[in-house]
Length: 102
Image (cartoon, rainbow, N blue to C red; front, side, top):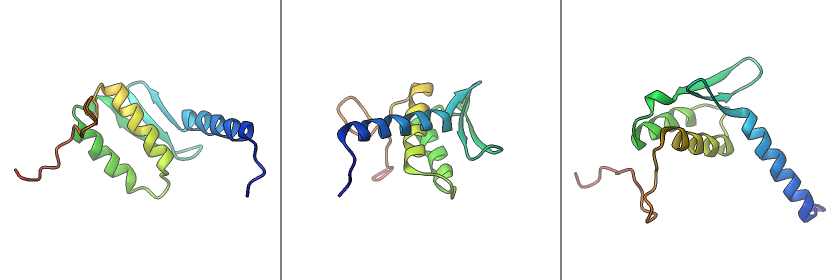
């Protein structure tokens, strides 16, 4: 059992969110995932033209040993926002076709 209060949990969540804002950013037309002080992984937003493109970059990112689910979530959020592409329709159904039945 944790000794954290509800306020502690909120403060921790805000700190984590602030850290993600620093680790995954948008600069000069690129989504930049900072790996460490000297390295980063960059995705050119101009190369994101469809939901399939987002998923292609996501699969590349998931191959990296340094990636976390929080970085993935932040990347997806920024990729969708910056490209104007939705991965889900308003009705909640996937916007990306699985290709099954084609």
